[in-house]
Amino acid sequence: GENVEQHPSTLSVQEGDSAVIKCTYSDSASNYFPWYKQELGKRPQLIIDIRSNVGEKKDQRIAVTLNKTAKHFSLHITETQPEDSAVYFCAAHNAGNMLTFGGGTRLMVKP
Amino acid sequence: SAVISQKPSRDICQRGTSLTIQCQVDSQVTMMFWYRQQPGQSLTLIATANQGSEATYESGFVIDKFPISRPNLTFSTLTVSNMSPEDSSIYLCSVVLSISWQADTQYFGPGTRLTVL
Image 1: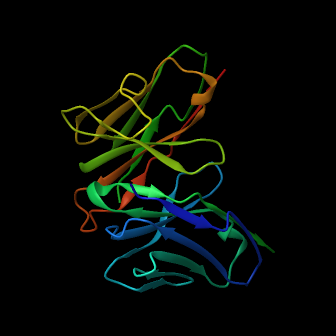
Image 2: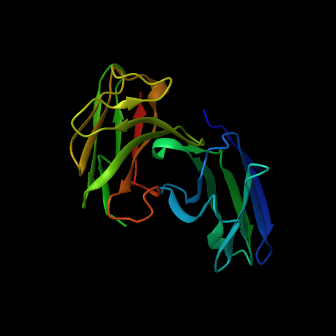
C-alpha cells in the first residue's frame, strides 16, 4: 500500500519568514495530493491540493509543488503569521478515494 | 462544501462498554469514511462506510470491534465496542461530495473525542 513520509515533524519560524514542509510517497499511481491544516481541538481543514497533471499550484501565501518523478511534494508558506501555527498534514490519494496521511508537521510561528 | 456534524462531540466511557458515534451530512455524498486520530498522531483510516452493504475495513481494524452502518447517503454510525483505554482517540468521519467536480476532495467532521477509563 501507499506510504507517505513527512518532514520535519516540528518547525519553528519567525513571523514573516517562509516555511517549507516536505512529503514523499511510495505509490507511483497516486494522483491527488491534498494538504490539511489542523488547529488545536479542531477538524483538519483542506488548505490546498494538487493533482498529478500539475507541477505547481499557488493560492495567496500558500503554494504546493509536485515532483512525480521523485515522488515528492512540498508545501510552501510565505510571510508566515502567528495564525499559521497549527499541525499540517500531507496526504496522497490513489485508488478508491483512499487517502494516506503523512505523520504531520507542527508549525510554530513566533511573533 | 457540506455541513458535517458528529454526535457526541466528546464522551468519557468505562472500559468494557460501547459507544456509537453518529455522522450527519446536510447533502448527499458519494463516499463516507471513518478515521481515528490518536493523541498527537496522524489520521488513520478505519474503514469506508458503504451504503446498504458492509463497510470495507483497513488492515488492523475489524467489524466486531468497529461496526459501521450507513443506511443512506447522508448518515453513518461508528460503534467502538468493548472499549479499553487504548481506544481513547478522536474519531472523525469524512465525506466526498457527490456534487463536487473534484470528486477526490475529502472534508472532515468536527470529530468525537473519546476517553476510556
